[in-house]
Length: 414
Image (tube, rainbow, N blue to C red; front, side, top):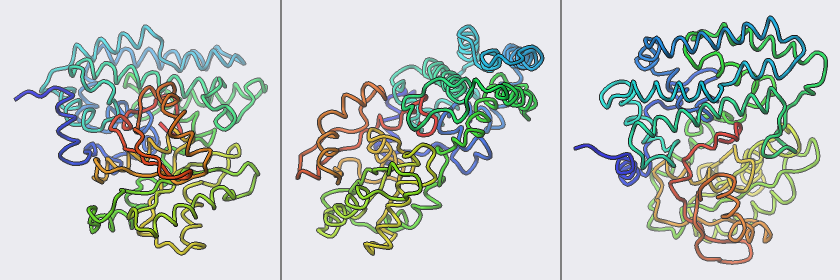
């Protein structure tokens, strides 16, 4: 029986809560650990040996890769102090994106390496959920176009110095007008043309993008991963013993509030939100508290909101580690809820049971009134739907599977 993309997606969700793609973080290494969250398709091109070989065997894709290397070599030789000259050479042009997309579609067959990629990886991952209703060729094309934009966006922000979505916290670390800055780009280009997989059509550009993230110390997308084996290991082991019928809610979500002062680990607001959540936990509403927030405020802080709230819950409020889940990547309230939904799906927690947020009154009403439209605007979809309001500080929400869609223009929290 031949399944459509949407039906396969439905089967994975209903059978397993949500299926983790087979090319999990266990098989992803080095820089690709962070890349897997931003440019998942390109990471699979890199990490699945048979697929990598299949793509390298194609003369047209190989020629595109050689042309991109030649462009970078020419930039090293000719760009001098012109920043845009380096960054333009390191990005995919619209014509190249179209050419690669057309070639991938032409190569696709249901039973070859690209067919298996779509069926076994792209659909069950949910990373390209917005395209799940398309036929497999179109899904592959859309995934490629999204990943090409992902590479270009990383280079635009963290090499060319263009403004990110949240400029106050996520901007480039360098002054691109400094006389010495073009030399950094030249070194990056030199490293990228010598990447180990340099003949692949994407390799030199993906390397340039990831190195740009690295020198900006912007690798937060991979912080504490794989969560199931690090900070969430204890809670997920406990989850296997939980009788979900004994609880009205799956978990209590605490969105972080980052301090604005350098050197401050946890804000007063973060502490009070934790205390509000503990009240509800001790009332037996849910078996878990999830604390959510990344390294956000102030600019380039080393303190992670979720980690610091977990410490506070354990050390000050004496909550056992086994009932605390962390989500350490969110950079805004929109992704506090989106990333929470992702953890629920990927770990097989109940999908039909609501969760609750526990937070300050202002943020609680923001979540239920304003944030849905902001999610539509910034993410392109709704990662949750509202339930009942319980108090000024608590409101229900239901996770939605669209939350698994990658947000390509947020490299630290895609």
